[in-house]
Length: 170
Image 1: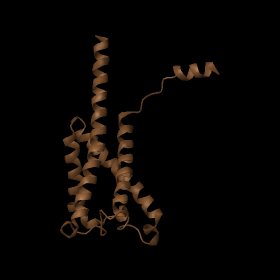
Image 2: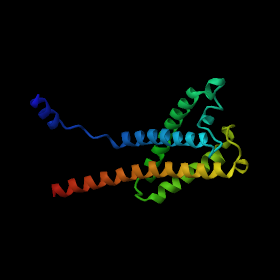
Image 3: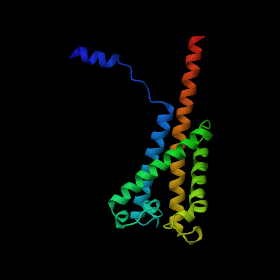
């Protein structure tokens, strides 16, 4: 028994690759913040339900049930992976909370102004209630900070580790 513990302690687990972390961050961020978005819809802070992602492509009453909500959260999580990969490709070197805030605002503007015609469940911006706009901006900003800061922080850690290894070899 003691030998098993010793072998477990000596076994070095390889750390997760940076790209895997980005994908996982995007998935978790999308599911987490769209889940919080569902909660804000439930308590009437917003008129937008996460199932709006299903409206253009599905028929049937199932999308209005719990199954539709769960599938919507998973689809938003998958789409969020793409958003996280875009952040990784373009903005990962900026270790600043403002970059994440602006990324969240950019995503809000993209969804509500550019992609709005795709989603019939989202009214045009000028027809949305003030609570919906404020809540949505806050959720997108928090999502941007979550994804952005996680990725940028990890980038800083990778650079720091590389620098330490380089100094150790010198």
